Image 1: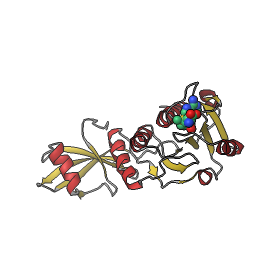
Image 2: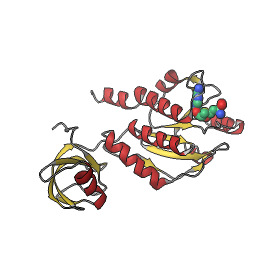
Image 3: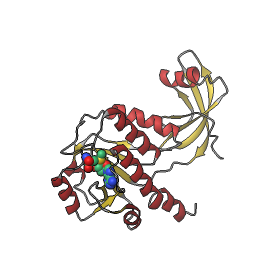
Length: 245
Ligand code: SAM
């Protein structure tokens, strides 16, 4: 059954079966904001259950009960892409979280670099922003968002790191099409990477330095642009092609 994209959807971190009592906020969203009534249908989703239709079977001023009916979409994970990014000034970090969620990132890992100007990062606030973006973008899961770590800790594994290097690198499309998932994407802060950091990152065996063109992009622009290119070459598109989609 094709999902009815006009039905509103809600992320619920609990088993999507039987009767479900919504929280006051969730009841207010469906009942107060969207003016849904008894008998109306809505959609519920999470990573483990996929997406299910549900019917409003009881509605009070600040309460609502749903009955889960049929599954609309099976669970589906996004490609294993991790975004390593330096926290930015608040509204730009919000842009990174929202766009990366829309672009199908699996993990969001803030990293603290020498020139990071805004090291404070509120994981709870980030999670709330991510849920909203996932509901809107028709995702079936949420990206995992972690607390910030020092850059060297994030680079300590052996995953391939596509390093957005403002000082220059390979042409991004060619470089990315020669690698495969899983992959990390590394974007620096407003102040860019220090020379020591650049040397350390490039010294890694599994680093792929890429240029995003001759202009200096804002960090949020660079994150969105590089994510889009990775998804369009080795992420969503390659996976869809391989699965005959
Ligand atoms: N302060 C740096 C400068 O003036 O050279 C600019 C840093 S830029 C605002 C933030 C990050 O975006 C960079 O660290 C890099 O990861 C990425 N970025 C921006 N423009 C880029 C480009 N043309 N090629 C590759 N990465 C770029």
